[in-house]
Amino acid sequence: MAATFVDRAVLHVSGGNGGHGCTSVHREKFKPLGGPDGGNGGNGGDVVLVVEASVTTLLDLHHHPHQRAGSGRPGQGSMRDGAAGVDLTVPVPDGTVVKDAVTGEVLVDLVGVGTAYVAARGGRGGLGNAALASSRRKAPGFALLGEPGDARDVVLELKTVADVALVGFPNAGKSSLIAAVSAARPKIADYPFTTLVPNLGVVQAGDTVFTVADVPGLVPGASGGRGLGLEFLRHVERCSMLVHVVDCATLEPGRDPVTDLETIEAELAAYGGLADRPRLVALNKADVPEARDLAEMVGADVAERFGWPVFVISAATRHGLRELSFAMAERVTAERAAAPVAEPTRIVLRPAPVREVGFTVEQTGEQSFVVHGDRPRRWVLQTDFGNDEAVGYLADRLARLGVEDALAGLGALAGAEVTIGDVTFDWVPTLRAGAMPLGGRGTDERLETSARLRAIDRKASRRARRGAFDEAVETDWATEPEAGE
Image 1 (cartoon, rainbow, N blue to C red):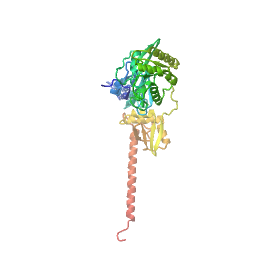
Image 2: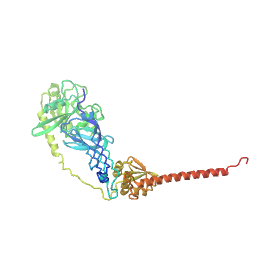
Image 3: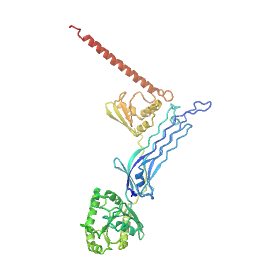
Image 4: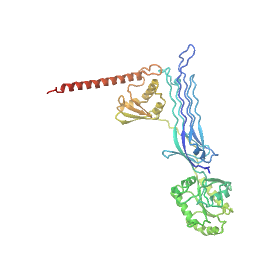
């Protein structure tokens, strides 16, 4: 039978790519060069996880792990901007924890219907040449490329959101209990089996309404992964109280109410984080005469030994369920009253200091450098390296930011390897902002001059090497002894 409940899924989320800017010049009759009119590219869409009440499992995401938002459209001429990519909304159940798949870091805990989290942001759209025009570049022959969207792997884990968790061995009667006190209808049968998926039920006792979770049965070694292991314990973390459901009619050797409680408490202690939760004990299956006698005999001992209230119940005949329900409601009410009042969220704006350089330069070798920083990385991604004018514009931006001066201060020489993001290039010190005229559209005379200078240097080096070789040969001939000497 196919699975209908999944509480863990790995998602590969990708934001949409930004659209490229457009390079265009306005043309009409009698106005062959009417100025740049290339529009901007549209921003890429975001991948947003949103809690929805109608979603109770991660099954759909388990079958469709790749989620990608729409990409932005490129800009067009006549100042037409590209359309923005469509955001992708991914519905998730209440109580979903989002973790980074690589580091395991908890990114967000999605609790409450409507809670949203942007798992992957879309890339920014590139500027068209109309937006890049300035007094120095009146008609840019280039545009900026759109930035790629974020791509990452995240792990989604569902932790049941309930006030009360029913814990106990398999076949202790947890499913029968939740069916008796609520409208939930979990699988119940008169043969031994264990619940494989959590069940939630809403219980009303007086004026108090609370939720009860029937989670998979616990076995010795569960905290170490035996049986359902962590698949069970994950679903009791959010509950404000625990109810031990003890099977008093079991015939298994070595099983009795006290031993069962000690075993389950040992597993909860090994898992950790649950010692502060209040407990109740429900000695179940009192409809069986032997079980009723055992429950009445050990009830006082259990209460004295563990210090928890004990109730003798029968989920089949509903004996003792009213008292148990009101006891759960009383403790849930007390826990809710003791919970701190949630303060309204305040957004604190912390602008970067005015003198913040926004980058750092790391020297990784004698003539190897790596430039770190968000702005230099984004600028490199936006640059069309097949367009000399675009490369010159990048050089101007880096120079104004102070990257050129930082490299010179670290002793970088012409030809030093400089890495920004995924791009490595040879540093040319002559590429300083405004050092030379720009040249025609799509070109930059500084690049052409630097290329010529590098070519002259290469020729001079070859001549020098050739001259040194010729001199060495002549010296060898001059010093070589003649035949017969």
